[in-house]
Figure 1 (spheres, rainbow, N blue to C red):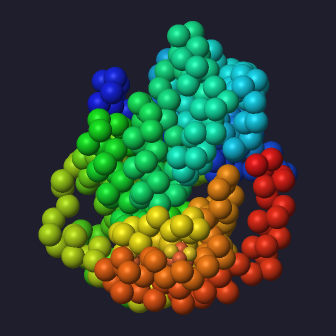
Figure 2 (figure 1 turned 90 degrees about the vertical axis):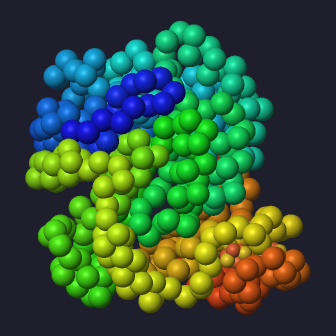
Length: 393
Ligand code: SF4
Ligand code: SF4
């Protein structure tokens, strides 16, 4: 296993982190014995960063049971997440966190994240409820060691959040397809330049970069030397970047654990060649041939006076063609709608201000109309109405 040093505290974190959100289930419940075997194998192969969340049903409990069964709390770091969107009062911070400690059967959390915090307004809302004072209290008690946030918004919001507080770390979605979407490489470099360790989620875009690739993309990988699976190419792209600290993989199979640990063991920063980079470009071209809006995600069109997150709307729209309608809609809902302040295409009033700034000269108003027609469909409207009630936004 390769380890990367957390620049904030000197801890050596395994380059591969175990994402505990995809454990195998039997009759709805997590198969604890199988999860234990996978977690133990990862631990023995050197993984020391285990990521879970309050919102991952049964996951914190499963990780807690594993740690207790193998008496291995001092061999690993626990990362878990506060469902910040459900916090409505100062007392909720205590209620959620104490429940997480109980579930994890531990007295402290090493890396504690504000879950899915996608804009600075959400952070300000939490500050209004006393977040900073609460963290200071739990930190002083040794119960929270590092505090950060996980993020699914756009680059500009990401930078604003990074600047909003003295965070210890952050977690972003990144892979070779998302180089310019969400926080993107620009966000990665921004956070790293501020001395923050960056944890990566969705390294294979929920498996889209591992299987079922467009034919031309698969052909390009098949013809490449050395022979590697698409998943290995995807992971190596991330570990090539020195700014990346931990790459999370949601593993639920021993062979997957062993394969990912093998790749993580010899993936050094700056190891990819010019030929490798050319391969990624060709694979991306194959993916992008299904792309509908040529938005680069530069953000020059922002801010929109109505709050429309234009690059994020276009990224989800493109994803709905590349990855399928369901995935695009999920991304659209998560990044523009299931949040405290909405930023979906339907908010556009066609003032045209954004188009004056777009270096790609995109007809943004017309494109947003297409986004709205495709993604704000009846299923979206139902989810947009009921999900906030279920999630208690
Ligand atoms: S045209 Fe629409 S998206 Fe563009 S700035 Fe105006 S309201 Fe915002
Ligand atoms: S300015 Fe144009 S290319 Fe840049 S993010 Fe906005 S729409 Fe996309």
